[in-house]
Length: 125
Image (cartoon, rainbow, N blue to C red; front, side, top):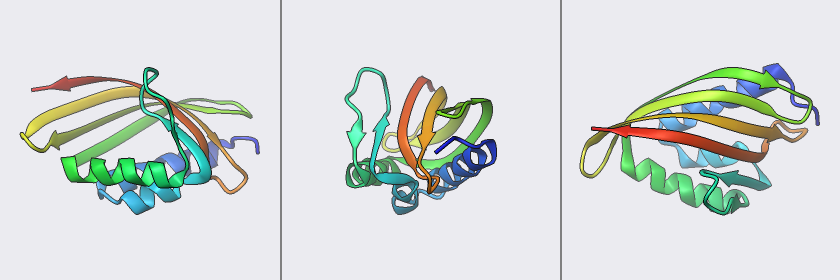
Protein backbone atom coordinates (compact mmCIF):
# COMPACT_ATOMS: atom_id res chain seq x y z
CA UNK A 1 0.00 0.00 0.00
CA UNK A 2 1.06 3.53 -0.63
CA UNK A 3 1.30 5.64 2.53
CA UNK A 4 -1.43 8.27 2.33
CA UNK A 5 -1.01 11.56 4.27
CA UNK A 6 -4.52 11.32 5.79
CA UNK A 7 -4.00 7.69 6.84
CA UNK A 8 -0.61 8.56 8.35
CA UNK A 9 -2.16 11.42 10.35
CA UNK A 10 -4.97 9.16 11.52
CA UNK A 11 -2.47 6.49 12.60
CA UNK A 12 -0.38 9.03 14.54
CA UNK A 13 -3.51 10.40 16.24
CA UNK A 14 -4.51 6.87 17.31
CA UNK A 15 -0.96 6.16 18.53
CA UNK A 16 -1.06 9.33 20.65
CA UNK A 17 -4.46 8.42 22.12
CA UNK A 18 -3.27 4.90 22.98
CA UNK A 19 -0.13 6.22 24.69
CA UNK A 20 -1.85 9.05 26.58
CA UNK A 21 -4.59 6.71 27.81
CA UNK A 22 -2.01 4.02 28.73
CA UNK A 23 -3.89 1.45 26.65
CA UNK A 24 -1.50 -1.31 25.49
CA UNK A 25 -4.26 -3.16 23.60
CA UNK A 26 -5.06 -0.06 21.54
CA UNK A 27 -1.35 0.51 20.84
CA UNK A 28 -0.80 -3.11 19.74
CA UNK A 29 -3.87 -3.04 17.45
CA UNK A 30 -2.18 -0.30 15.43
CA UNK A 31 0.39 -2.84 14.22
CA UNK A 32 0.08 -5.61 11.66
CA UNK A 33 0.27 -9.16 13.07
CA UNK A 34 3.83 -9.41 11.73
CA UNK A 35 4.70 -5.73 12.26
CA UNK A 36 8.04 -4.61 13.62
CA UNK A 37 8.83 -1.89 16.14
CA UNK A 38 12.39 -0.69 16.67
CA UNK A 39 12.53 1.74 19.61
CA UNK A 40 16.21 2.67 19.08
CA UNK A 41 18.71 1.91 16.35
CA UNK A 42 20.78 -0.12 18.84
CA UNK A 43 18.07 -2.65 19.73
CA UNK A 44 16.69 -5.44 17.60
CA UNK A 45 13.14 -4.67 16.44
CA UNK A 46 10.26 -6.25 18.30
CA UNK A 47 8.56 -8.62 15.88
CA UNK A 48 4.84 -9.30 15.89
CA UNK A 49 1.83 -7.80 17.60
CA UNK A 50 2.26 -9.94 20.75
CA UNK A 51 5.80 -8.66 21.36
CA UNK A 52 4.60 -5.09 20.80
CA UNK A 53 1.70 -5.67 23.23
CA UNK A 54 4.16 -6.92 25.87
CA UNK A 55 6.30 -3.80 25.39
CA UNK A 56 3.34 -1.42 25.65
CA UNK A 57 2.02 -3.27 28.71
CA UNK A 58 5.30 -2.41 30.45
CA UNK A 59 5.18 1.21 29.24
CA UNK A 60 1.64 1.61 30.64
CA UNK A 61 2.90 0.57 34.09
CA UNK A 62 5.86 2.96 34.22
CA UNK A 63 4.55 6.25 32.80
CA UNK A 64 1.86 8.67 34.00
CA UNK A 65 0.51 12.09 32.94
CA UNK A 66 1.48 11.44 29.32
CA UNK A 67 1.26 14.12 26.65
CA UNK A 68 2.08 13.37 23.00
CA UNK A 69 2.35 15.54 19.91
CA UNK A 70 3.79 15.33 16.43
CA UNK A 71 4.45 17.12 13.17
CA UNK A 72 4.42 15.25 9.87
CA UNK A 73 7.64 16.03 8.02
CA UNK A 74 7.23 13.94 4.85
CA UNK A 75 5.07 11.26 3.28
CA UNK A 76 6.27 9.15 0.38
CA UNK A 77 4.53 6.15 -1.19
CA UNK A 78 6.65 3.87 1.02
CA UNK A 79 7.00 5.70 4.34
CA UNK A 80 5.77 8.48 6.59
CA UNK A 81 8.22 10.59 8.57
CA UNK A 82 7.20 12.56 11.65
CA UNK A 83 8.87 14.47 14.43
CA UNK A 84 7.21 13.61 17.73
CA UNK A 85 7.50 14.72 21.31
CA UNK A 86 6.15 13.44 24.58
CA UNK A 87 6.27 14.27 28.25
CA UNK A 88 5.38 12.05 31.19
CA UNK A 89 6.26 11.17 34.75
CA UNK A 90 8.37 8.01 34.96
CA UNK A 91 7.29 5.86 37.89
CA UNK A 92 9.00 4.96 40.02
CA UNK A 93 10.81 7.24 41.01
CA UNK A 94 8.62 10.10 39.74
CA UNK A 95 11.03 11.67 37.25
CA UNK A 96 9.59 14.26 34.87
CA UNK A 97 10.65 13.08 31.41
CA UNK A 98 10.59 14.69 27.98
CA UNK A 99 11.29 12.89 24.71
CA UNK A 100 11.82 14.34 21.25
CA UNK A 101 12.21 12.02 18.31
CA UNK A 102 11.67 10.93 14.74
CA UNK A 103 9.41 8.15 13.44
CA UNK A 104 9.81 6.28 10.15
CA UNK A 105 6.58 4.35 9.59
CA UNK A 106 5.25 2.12 6.83
CA UNK A 107 1.58 1.11 6.77
CA UNK A 108 -0.21 -1.84 5.18
CA UNK A 109 -3.47 -1.78 3.19
CA UNK A 110 -5.47 -1.86 6.47
CA UNK A 111 -3.56 1.18 7.81
CA UNK A 112 -1.76 -0.99 10.32
CA UNK A 113 1.93 -0.41 10.91
CA UNK A 114 4.22 -2.85 9.10
CA UNK A 115 7.37 -1.17 10.36
CA UNK A 116 8.12 1.56 12.89
CA UNK A 117 11.66 2.76 13.50
CA UNK A 118 12.33 5.58 15.92
CA UNK A 119 15.16 7.75 17.17
CA UNK A 120 14.72 9.90 20.25
CA UNK A 121 16.52 11.94 22.86
CA UNK A 122 15.50 12.13 26.52
CA UNK A 123 15.59 14.91 29.10
CA UNK A 124 14.86 14.01 32.72
CA UNK A 125 14.83 16.02 35.88
